[in-house]
Amino acid sequence: MEARVKTFFERYESVFNRALGGDLGMDEVASLYASAFIAASPMGVMTGKNDDQLKQVMAQGYERYRAIGTKAMRVRDVRISPIDDLHCVAHVAWTATYAQRGRPEVKIDFDVHYLIQALDGDPKVFGWVSGDEEALLRQHGLA
Image (tube, rainbow, N blue to C red):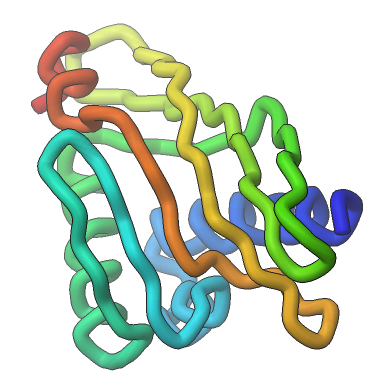
């Protein structure tokens, strides 16, 4: 499963960057996620479904990322914690690159922990745990 999940996150990075550039529809973004998911952050816990509302929220998220100068998201490392033959936690180390007019480029490292299910060999995200993205952006003067 480890190799499949690492390959999945190569695709996830590619899809994210193409969507960030406006070169991708939300159907491909949504294809990375299971039919339902859970997300936890300092803002609380939320649940959702992989439906038109998710696609709309994701499109708005990419628009916000573009507005604050996000140029790229790169995976630095993926570490897998197996749960069973079908599930794992993927600890993903990201680097986000921001470029705002009149300011030097900023790179921010952060981690997200993804819950992955691989039914029929096809990994999908069914949850994630992340830190305080807004606080990190404020700390670097981006939000």
